Length: 286
Ligand code: NAD
Image 1 (cartoon, rainbow, N blue to C red):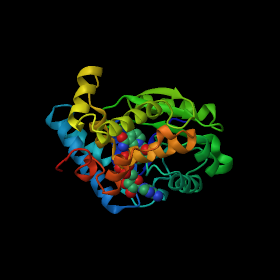
Image 2 (cartoon, rainbow, N blue to C red; image 1 turned 45 degrees about the horizontal axis):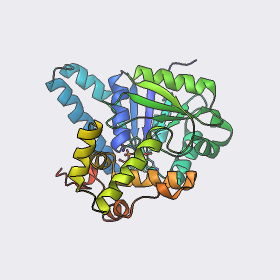
Image 3 (tube, protein in one colour; image 1 turned 60 degrees about the vertical axis):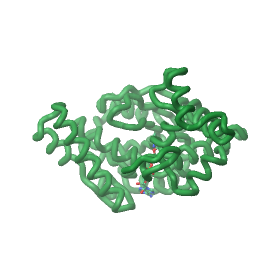
Image 4 (cartoon, rainbow, N blue to C red; image 1 turned 135 degrees about the vertical axis):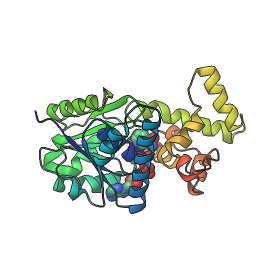
């Protein structure tokens, strides 16, 4: 089994920038890829800021920080990362976009490359189907936000995924300092199947006037021992991402209870996407 030494990360948003950072932190080469130059610039700034904070806190020396940052390069096309042994797709949560990206990944990366998706909810088997004959190397590698902090990686096997692909994915996750846990290929896997209906319900509670957002969050923190209330968490994840995941659950599992709350839909339409846009449920001056 080939040891994986480099990771190509497709998508330089909240998750993709975090995945590239933890790869470089573990001593691996990281190719950060995005179609939007502004997102690549944002990722570069995030990497520099995260590394410099670690130096200030005495977690690494400035020489180590320089070496970490030099392991990440930034590109507008995935062809430049073709030498990576693992390609992780972390682009927008939309089945059509992901299928198109995977068709291109299958053409771009050699057959020995593991093709992973960080999707929160979309079927790994359906993404594998876009790849065709090489679908045995397609796997779900679901990181959590913020990637440098959160330990879990859900590893999801599609119908065509090979044992070797799963074993190599688990090995990389461990090398990144994460705890890989398997889940089956059902919409939302375990984490979002349980989390998203709760977040949706919190929006309904707000919309129906059961309590103000800050009281909903305080109640769940103090009464249920949550480190962060569900509405604050939704802002952190991104309201557009929550909306898209709920739509996948609704379509795939065929039950009305997964349909996004009208208030969540309205906020997304208004461009209030959470922390990343400066405001969602709450205002977040950037
Ligand atoms: P995001 O909106 O912050 O970033 C998405 C990025 O994908 C953008 O930079 C966009 O330019 C890029 N992109 C779109 N089409 C592309 C293409 N064809 N090629 C290359 N890049 C492309 O989203 P995010 O929050 O980072 O989520 C990314 C993925 O990770 C989604 O599948 C999401 O469900 C999943 N995820 C998100 C979280 C979270 O908390 N935000 C947690 C776990 C998993």
